[in-house]
Structure formats: structure tokens, C-alpha cells
Image 1: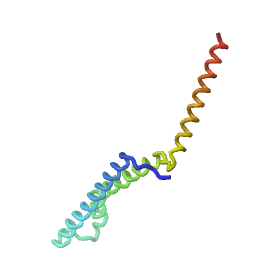
Image 2 (image 1 turned 90 degrees about the vertical axis):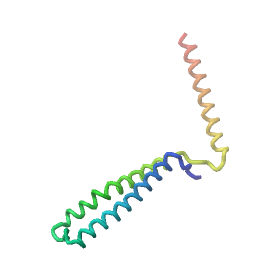
Image 3 (image 1 turned 120 degrees about the horizontal axis):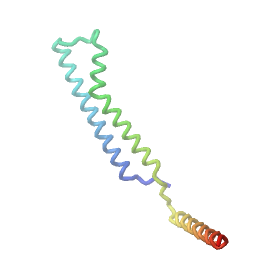
Image 4 (image 1 turned 180 degrees about the vertical axis):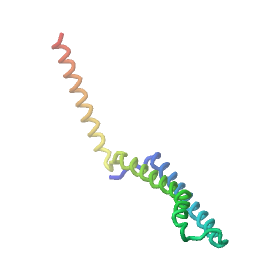
Length: 117
């Protein structure tokens, strides 16, 4: 049995991939910017470790978090989708069983109504 891949989960996966791509782009841009500052001598690593890590987190961290969350939501939606049966007879058997229950329930309600009168 296989799970059906829904359109909603595909949309979440695509948006997560876009956020991941932007995370990589932002990480590269941040690296080049900080490298230029180091090469020019306007920024030194010593005593600025926290600021450098904070700069990376501000520019890249949130997008990585969004990508992971969106991929997780897409996976959750996919896992909540019903299983796809390989044998179509299985699903029709369940439908006929439900119909029999409905008929039995309606007959019981009629008997209760008739006895109440």
C-alpha cells in the first residue's frame, strides 16, 4: 500500500525547497560580505565572535528554520493522507459494511419512534 501524495504537501515541499535555496544564497552572500570586511581590516575575529555568529543567524537562521518547519508540515500532511489500496475490492467492502450499519440504525430509530407513539 502506498500513500497518495497530495497537492498541499507538494506545495509545502516546494516552498521549503525555495527557503532552503534562499538560505544557501544568503549564507554565501553573508560569507562574502564578512570576508571582504576581514580582508579590508575593518573587522577582526577576536572579541567579535558573538557578533559574527549573530550576523549569520540573522541572515540565514530564520530561513533555515522556516524550510525545516515547512518540510515537516508537508511530511505530516502526507502521512495523514489515507492509504491507497492496491485492491479496489477492499474499499468497496468497507463502503457496503457502512451502508448496512446505516440501514440498521435507521430501522432501529423507526422502531423506537413507533414504540414511543
